[in-house]
Length: 154
Image (tube, rainbow, N blue to C red; front, side, top):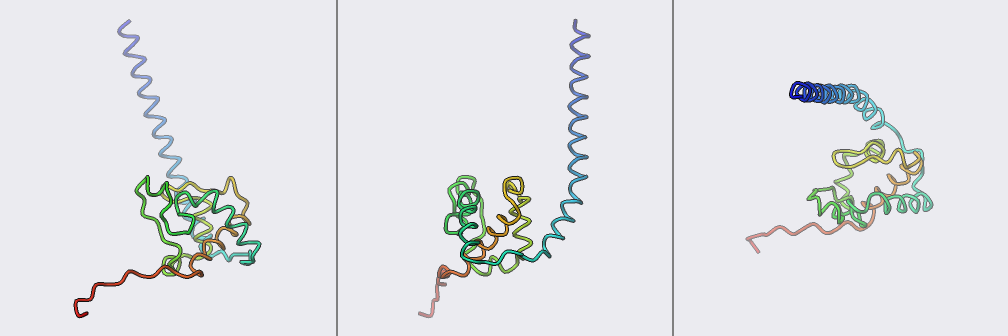
């Protein structure tokens, strides 16, 4: 009986080790493809004009899928982000969006990044582009005032 339990334990451990190796191989296989896709998408041009209709659709998608972390106002202070202690971009600040192309934003929304889950399975490409337009609109509104620096000369 003891030999049987030892043999079953060994087989279980080998099976788990094999599973972990298969998962690692799968991740290794996906990584170069994901990097290629990210580079290709960074150069994409948004085919959807930022019309009132596009912004309304983008706002709807953003409210459902993004605001819980990125905040309803795009300030990066959504309830879930605060609970998870995440430091997210303040999309109201034009400088925060300056380094992102529309293709970069499309890629992040579609595929996810870090702890963020991608939405490509739930959203059509046009919906993602509408969301990109809406995210860009945060920086076009009145930007939040920058905190004043303490000036000892005053």
